[in-house]
Image (tube, rainbow, N blue to C red; front, side):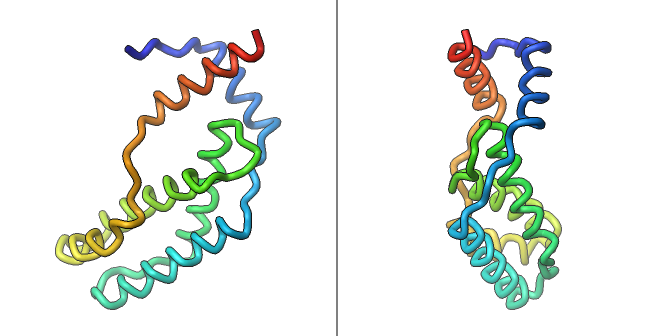
Length: 134
C-alpha cells in the first residue's frame, strides 16, 4: 500500500538533490551508450526508419544522471543507464512507422529492462533517508 509523500519532505529532498548531488559517469557507462547508439543507428538505417541523432545520446547521458540523482547516488549505475536507454528506445520506436517500429523493437529486446515503479523507488529512498537522519 503506497502512502502519500509528505510535501515538505519532498521539497527538502529536491532542494538537497539539486544542491549536493552531481552523479558521475564512468568510461564503461559511456561505452555502453556509444554501443547502443551505433546499434540503433545501423539498424534504423537498415530498416528504413528515421535515424537517431547524437543529441538523443546526449539525452541518454543526462537522463541516466537524473535517475542517479533521484537515488542521491554519487555515480551513475548500470541500472540508471539501462533505464535511460530504454526510455529513449521507447520514444524512438514511437516515432517510427509501425512496421519499422515492430522490427526494431524485436531487435532491441536486449536493451529493455524489467519495469520498475519510480514512485515506489522514490518513496523507498525517502523513507530510508529519513530513517538514517532520525
